[in-house]
Length: 541
Image 1 (tube, rainbow, N blue to C red):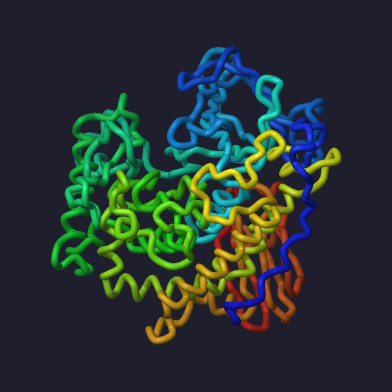
Image 2: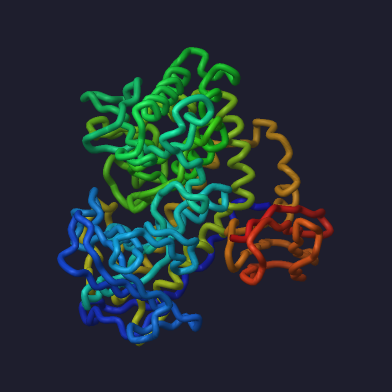
């Protein structure tokens, strides 16, 4: 298969002069969130009401009957995003006005009570988080689900937002064990924990090894996310700190590459590789140092992820030269040593681990044949662009958002210059970066001389017809993409007892299988052609 296929032609995107458009919404192809708060929204949670219009027809107006109506608690999100005029929010669904959390399924996502409304003010494409999360999901990991929507807050149109999941312990999110006050020894003490590398005060502990290239006393600081500070016991906090300290020591030792007593004793090899691949592809400015989540389950090794905070990824800031399509994110300190927080030393060490890098390069080869195929990435990006540029009510979501927030050509995050002045130009610049970055990574992670093992069975057929299967788990539609396949292919879904539930006959292209009517549980998807067959476990949520 040719990894360097010509890029899809950029969608023909209609562009309007935003200053001439009233930032009002009469009709849209995106869901509409209508929120009314009882007072000014600040960093302290207050009560509000929220309704969601999300018609099956795909066309929504503010006066349509809502698919959801409920009481919420709403809080303004802080951090860098909190300095922007377009605010982001945390939303908690309640049982009436009781302030008691209510798990609710919203916009097709699994039921929960904690949600985020991300303004994506600095990301004019509204695609950076969605693209990274979708790719990471296809690589086999959980990433918070996000949906594009338009928001009316206290009768004022606010623009396009991403509504979705926050990083949280849950069987549908970060699936680690619930840690209770009885889990104080033995295997029970070893999980589950969710924590992150971040900046700001009040760190729970600091890495025992200074970041590479540090010049002014920078540290790598850890913050525990779960259990919450009000619930975690001192013995539990001491355990996870000691475990990560042990990883630090093993990673920093002269024998760190030893597969038995080195860093692999404490951390999962594959999660380190895949986190590094998605991070270096997107070249996230915050990589390895801010909002870098980690988790550990009972009697398991530490895992990296999920990914979060990609607004300044994919060449969206020129700070510290991260907009270039060359160079490594883990070497940020080499280009910008005075940053308050620098990437933790782990990934610089991993780049020196011969076996790790060989396995990463071979794994990257397999991903380039499937999930990270250039055309597939462009297909995902185009799907976001299509939603943003579909005309409804005379205008598009892009037009309305940038009429409310006229920032084309206005720097808000030290963007690379020349800045895009239209949405179509923004998407084109995005694609240009992706293509160049993949070419650079292909050269750096060159697998041709490594004698990589033959791909697994699922990749054997992937080489012939380039298969992508996503999302998995799914609660409604299962997407099966067969690119460049010229053979008759049968796609079948079986129950675990062997009963055929669904079947599709196809040769090529984008196929969907509706599994919404099936019972929750595990199924087997089989793809059969003259080249062979593959079987993959599918989870229906």
